[in-house]
View (cartoon, rainbow, N blue to C red):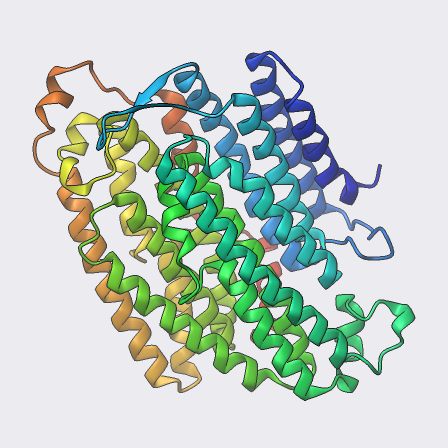
Length: 494
């Protein structure tokens, strides 16, 4: 079987099979096996040139390979965490800490099956070279992940799921209209040669109709931007990330948002090839700074630590949009930041799951003495704070600094000043929240009740991610550096 097909068919078949497997132990083994196999197959794509398939509709270029690698690494760590999580939750009724009533989680088969299908659909997004197939794959990620958000079968998770489906459906409908308009702009292309195939659009960009292409890019940016979490159409994101199991939140923020970003990048590449870079880049810069500003407002004084992380994702999607729009060395910083943000935010959401398990609350005011009650999680929580806010020596510092440097090199003083100011505001806001959680004495129930200890399999996955984030702040492997520069050049930078 062609490796390109195997990458998304293996988790798809395993996901469908998970619904039929009756043994929880066997189902968890399949989850780990598929995660490991996916990592191995993805690593092979960095060493070998993999031929495209289905008439070049499926092929891994630099962007697809990078985002696929991020997805594969995050899924592997999430799979280890998931096995421990499902073992702990198995057959247990939960009591809502705020409203007091009991509720029961969804069947494990549904959770595991949808998790594997989620991996398959995100893989398909990374491999899609046809913009119509890319649209289908992005919509499939929504359908595969919705049951994961509703895992707890709580009225708040139900509300979050419907909000996710409704808002993302509006966004994907706008993206579909963007594809129709892109087809109109490509009316002069030979319709027998797949006018929505990325290679055809880039090779014949000179004959695309500029007016229709501009309108198409607006619809694609707003449509995929909804799924990516760009303000003002980000409103599904805080609820979905807050109400999902933390392992799902890690994948939503660390991997899913990149899928929507990839859709925008494809459209942006076409605009650059057609000579519309200034038009597209100005829109990217505006939405980037606006998203950062909205996130800053909601992070300050945030009462729910998982929602704080969700709004942080809105901020960092804004940073990615800003870096891509600026170009120059900022484009390199943006693609590097996509890696750094994914690893860091996934780590933070996994640690947030440990905090929620220990304290049974998402309220910042009820979490005190984290370093004493859960020492390992407390240290990771603090490290994650400094990493996600761009503090050295962690990877996000390097990528955020590169974006700032790129803005200054291009003489974009006003965006640079706004960017730097918003980063400072968000740093202060998140620092105040995290320090209140980690310092002081733990609540009496935590100290005198059943001892709360950090489980090895709940600590290992975020620790691995923390090590990777730290490494990327000190050393970027040459193959990754080369790929990032190639991607930056494709975005009009270097």
